[in-house]
Amino acid sequence: MILLKSVRLVNWYGFNYITVPIGYFSLIAGKNGNGKSVLLDAIKYALYGDTVFNKSTENKGSRTLSSYTRGLLDATAGTYMRPADQFPNVYTHIVLEMFEEEMGRNFVLGTVIDTNSANGLNTNRYIIENSRLSDMDNVYEENGLTIPYDGIELQKKYSFKMLDAMDGIAKFMQRTGLRLNAQQIVPFRRKLRSIMSYDPDAKIDQFIRESVLEEKKVDFSKLVEAKNNIETLNTTFEKIDTEIKELEEILALFDGLKNARNVIFSDDVKITYKKLLGIRRDIDEAIKYIDLAKRQLEEDDKKLEVIQKQEKDIQGRLKKVEDSLDAMDCTKAIRAAEEQVEELTSRKEELNIERKNLEVFQTKISELINWFYEKDISVNNQSILSSLTVTEYTAAQKASGIKAFSVQIQNVRDDLLAAITRLQDETNKNRSMQTQQQRLIDDCNNKKTTFSEIPDYVALKNEINKEFANRHIRSEAKFACEYVIAL
Image (cartoon, rainbow, N blue to C red; front, side, top):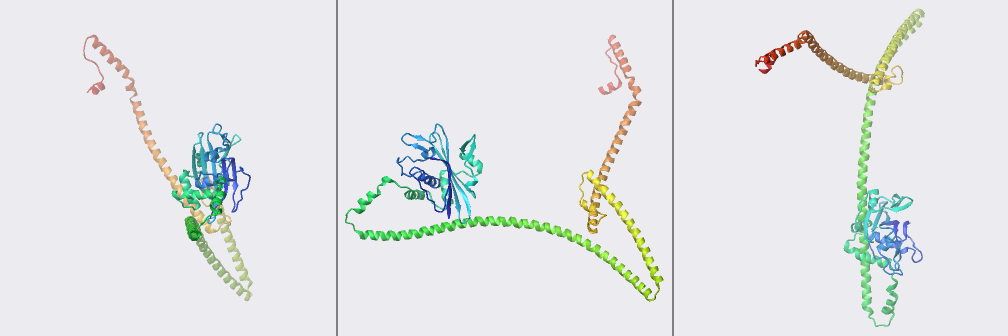
């Protein structure tokens, strides 16, 4: 079932801005002219587009769509709350918040009416799913004034599709469970008017007195038969109407379940994919831990072999000591103990040498890490490489870190060697170019004397040509190169 939860009216008759809550049972009470039927007419127009409004007023026919949007004060004087000279365009909003019980979600049905200066009307409608009236605003504040949004501004603000009047009514009825076509909506509106309106000029009581209370001879047999037939038809219609409503509820529930199933399926796929990624990461971590565990196990096996060997050696020595004690020969026990002390002392010196070598190795590793830091090269397992002389990490972890760092050093060394090779090639190339340039310089120096005599040769050639001209000789003196160029 779809329920009406609240109604918002903006610029509708005397309501500039109001939001009215609606419950399962709502009582609207008030004196004449307080706006009871105004609220019902707004709901009826928003949902079904019916412009035949309540006639229970002193001025019959004064309730029109434009009189509601302009806010008619006096039909005789033609005065309005929002006159055209002060408000050329009036934007009216009728917004209904609905609740779909089966799906447990709210949605909004909105109607925007644009009244121009000539009282021309343009109505658009929109639907916003999973929304409440408290989530949206139909007005905004500007310079201390409350101004309603027009249809385009509201559409930009909330990004919904704006529908024209006819499409909007069809979508509204479809969304609220009324599947009526264009021909069926006309009698539906007429029936709705009979329920919601009361016309005091209908003179129903006079009609009853004239048609029922006067003494007339009436054949009630056909009336009884017609009444029985009508009751039968009404019962049949009620059953059909009940079945239609049940089918509509089933269809609406099916659509909702279908949408919910699609949403659930999509969510399940996303959750499963996230779980898959998490499992893959866990598998990778587990493989790393297994590798470290294998190395640690191999190291522990080696240590165990050494311990077993030492234990065997100690047991042998203990047996010898016991034999010596049994033989009351303390000299052998003392000698064996002295040998043990000497062996342990030698082992201590070896361990001290290994410790010093490890400290030197740690210093070199730290220098390399510092060099990598200066070159802006990140180092993996830096905390392990900086803790080789302490027992914070296992030997397997240290060996793995040193191995990875060795590979990184090898890669950096290869890159440096390649760069050095390129620099050497560039150096050799520069040396070759310097040799060529030096040869050119030496050649120029060797021929410098010859080049310095060229101005004298040119002066001599010019004197000869001047003498030829004075003697009217057509020949011309030239250098050998000029002859070669001419040829």
